Amino acid sequence: EKAKPLQERLLQRQAHLSETSWLQKWWNTMCYLQYRQPVVVYVSYLFQLADDASALSGIQRGAAALRAAAEYRNQVCFHTLPQDTVGKNKTPLCSVAYKYMFHACRIAQETQDAYRIHDPSRYTHAVVACRNQFFAVPVFNENGDILPLTIMETNLKKCQEQAKRTRPDSLELGWLTTWNRDDWALARDKLLRLGGPSMQRALELLESGMLLLSLDEEEPVSYRQRALEYWHGGVNSGGNRYFDKSIHLVVSKNGKLGYIGEHSLMDGMPAVGLCNFIQKETYQKQLNMEDSDYSMSSVASSQEVENIFDDAFANLAKEGRLEIASLITHAKKDFKQLVNDHDLHVESFQGYGSSSIKKAGYSPDAFVQMAIQLATFRLFGKQVATYESTQVRSFLHGRTEVTRSVSKASEAFVKAMGMESSEDDELDRDVRKEKLELFRKATESHVVYIRKAIVGQGCDRHFMGLSMVVDEGEEAPALFSHPLFSRSKRWRVSTSTLPNMPGFGPVEEDGVGIAYEIKPNCVMFTITGRRERDFTEALCHQIEEALVEIQSLVEMEKPQRSKL
Image (cartoon, rainbow, N blue to C red; front, top):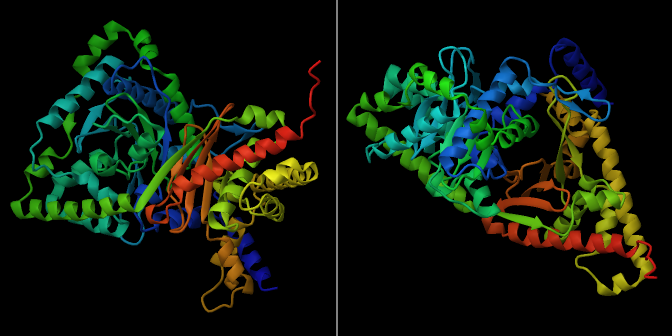
């Protein structure tokens, strides 16, 4: 009964906000812009992009990625990008996230951050980070045409050359963006106060860039090394970032390319389209399409590379420089602690993938989610609240809903499987058959939940809305203060699946972040957590073991073919 007036208020809010979602402002502000922890580790997410064999260096890979991103930016800005759709019926998806893709930046402010979108018709540059310094690099000529690949390559080399000549005592402002948001907000205000108009111009130039491309000195090889470089960069590359930029490409000396997404106002799926486009537009493909006459004519009309903070730093008084340097030292110290507190491991499961799962008659995502349930059940000794992100962009300004992987069906399955595999059970056909039936019911239950969540029939966003309209001093429904309800929302296991080997940090201090990509013949997991908990490597083993056990159940129940 107490919830009825709350529901009426929600319906009134929906009617009043007819041109947007009743949830959008609450979700964006409370869950992101008011969040005070650093965006690095806690908010941003990463992708590992495929190699480009035609790019022989980081400069070539970076130039190709930058030019491809400019092509995609034009499609977004000129409204020529095809509409995102989902399902067999091609249901159109909301495109509002795309306005936060290019020329956008989160702005640190006390209590609640802002987001600034700059006019793409006024700003024609990208930002390049090299040796912890930032450069404005032209991307378009005076006619609005994208500069040729060879010029992009030349300009990136200029950034490297200028960065090598930077004074040893130069200020490395990127470290400040790794800080707690309130600390960074105060530091940003101090930068503007001490640096005056030249600092304001420099920050605007950085924040208005099409995107940020980091040229790193690192040469990561393994999936784990790459994920760590894109997740936070560590003490070697963490200062070669500006984590507030909406889009951030990272290229290493050996040509490996990654993506960092600032998550506040844009979720992962729109970014997938950009990354897929960049991967298709290889260095050699772009080079083959280049017009040499146009390349030469564009040189004269292209702007020069500019060290963004040169003038601002030159105008700083000695006392001001020392004050800013002290802030950077403090931020860097906190960042080192943040990095040391967290760990990341990658599980490259090569046993099978979506092809085999589909042939066996299962949903690949539900199959993997139940393997995660079994693995985390064994890791924690019990089932814990598990969040799977499900997009609801079929609604105006929709973002995500929760698919809850813990259910009566998944509970029955993991308890039947037990804390460790049993060879005796594998030999007992009736036991195997029972486990397989429980697994099938668990996956089917998960699919039903996902289908409901996709069409807005999940419960978590609705519960949030109801809690938001409880008036001050009004007694809330008893459910909201029930310990079990609170426990069910403490996401010790946070999961999401996307292409391009995603990764992100854990939600809870005693939890894990599990990002995964299900490929036709393998499944890739990027698992994060607090180092002191020692969960990540152990969970990699548990997931592999769970996937092998489940496949054994599936395979052993298949009809045996005659050898004759």
